[in-house]
Amino acid sequence: MKKLSIFVDESGDFGEYKSHSPYYIVTMVLHDQSKDIRSEIQKLNSELEDLGYKNHVVHTEPLIRREEDYQNLSPNERRSIFTKLYYFTFKCKIQYKSFTFHKKEFENVFKLEGRMAREISLFIRENLTYFQSFEKVILYYDNGQHELNRILNTVLATELADYDVRKVLPCDYKLFQAADLICTLELLRLKSESKNLTRSELLIFHSKRELKKDFLKGIQQKIFHA
Image (cartoon, rainbow, N blue to C red; front, top):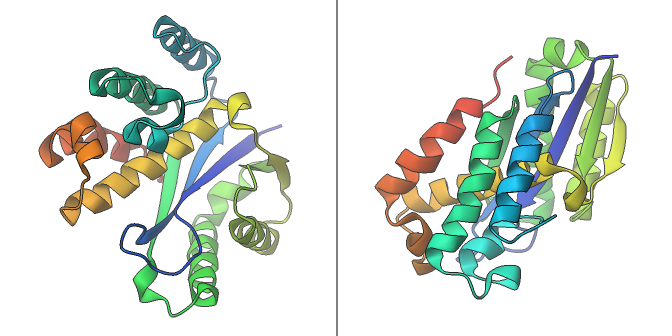
């Protein structure tokens, strides 16, 4: 049976617009399960273990901000972990689609939700032949935000004849961590373009030019095309 996995993660929240949180980003990582990624997973696990992080779940935003498990790590150590997850994502046979919303454009959360539903629906509708080429479509999401969970299920139920839902534990799926990474890179792209990279981000990525050269340019090769 030909199966498509869709791993979804988000950056931002449904609260009112605030200058420190101006965007809401949704990323879908699409994986045709016939394309084996076990060797990439094994390599990432081995590399993280060599850095002292056995069975570790990488959370990229806390990693950049030196929070949680990363409080005592230097910028170079944190960049090394970020880079390992980046190259895993880059080398995997996946594609992704990110949806970016500028919260200040919406009067209230209902209009934001409506726009999100329309854009995700349109993406599926425009690529329906691709999605219908799979006998089973499986949505993986951690139910972190119930508004997004509702939108995803409504859209898929409307646009696809059938789909399954699996609640994700990030420790179980490296591709969910890849979705987290891509959300963070999309956020960094937006902040870089508006010249709003923070001190913590510049400590890791050094400059707008280096961020683009070492990470943004490469990951954009994985953008979805049918």
